[in-house]
Image (cartoon, rainbow over all chains, first blue to last red; front, side, top):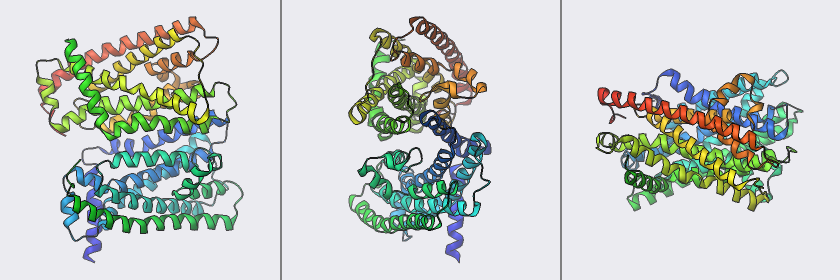
Length: 262
Length: 259
């Protein structure tokens, strides 16, 4: 019981710590308004590029991408931040599970990511006139959560590299750029060359964006379930990979003794 | 203002910037990624000039990020290293050091345009036909000056703030949108257009795009150049004014080492 209490205490403390120097308005601008500008930019580029008056796909796809980016970045930077603040050595020698530390540090941010995504969808829908009248909102929420779960697994996997690398911002930004191109948020995955399509299917979000798109047209129940199951599968696969990677990286980090380098 | 200070500050800054992994992402990887993304988004547009939008859009968005995240972020990095107050208090004027830093970043940032063109050419076979090489050079020089002036303005504005990261991010996508980095500003709502016109990058981008339109209208090029020159003067004036205010505030608050 104490462990659970400590988990939530740590999660809340870390979240609060990130924003202590900002006012509520500044946090709102940073976490809600700016992602919305990103979404509007991609939607307008799509409007120009695809000559498309109907921007449902781009509003949904980019909202999902925003949600994921927050999840992936927060989880991925868990150890990077600790390295920067000189606490990584203390964490590595502590008996606490390293993935539990990542979870603690990103727990509240996951909800923040869901909130950002919902805000993006809401504002995007109002700005670009997208109707949710024929969409089953519960199914839509399940799709969004599935995408987030897959992204969390991916973020957990990436976070392990923070134990051995001092360039997590570099790694995460490159991955985010790759996701922007490969996830199908901005153009159909089928347009990509075969090799890029294969990578696209290994990334989180590709399937949940397809599933969310389906909800705005003809829903094929079997296909939808299959897409969601695959998305959960991707998330769980990355989580398992994360367990192994964190152990390997922890061993390498201790052997190299470069935990304070940045 | 000593030329030697300017040049050495510029050279040191270029080395320091290139040593940062995130700078290398913005400078070397982003233009490639942005060009690929814009190509796939614009290739079905049916427009004959879509290549110009892909190459300039991919290059210029990365160029702005390089300038923004380095010039504004450098103030924060100096603050974090505890050297901001030293830079401010030394006999060499702070604006000279800052200008050198910004010029260094701006010179490097033009690599993004070359990379964007190379990506479009190698991966997708896109080419650009320059209507006048002389006017293209003039447009590039004016664009560089406008970016330097804006960077000076931003760097001064962020000297006192501990929230540089927040403000830097605030100026990224909104500026892409307002200045028409990847698409013409005419598709923006009417109420947003005055804001777009008030920003020098809008005119710099228009000038650059015009250099790839055939036949090019020299009169229109002249008109846009005059507007851009006017806006550069206005921004430079406000940058100088802002520096005077900041210079005074820095000494009153004495908070350059607080982060």
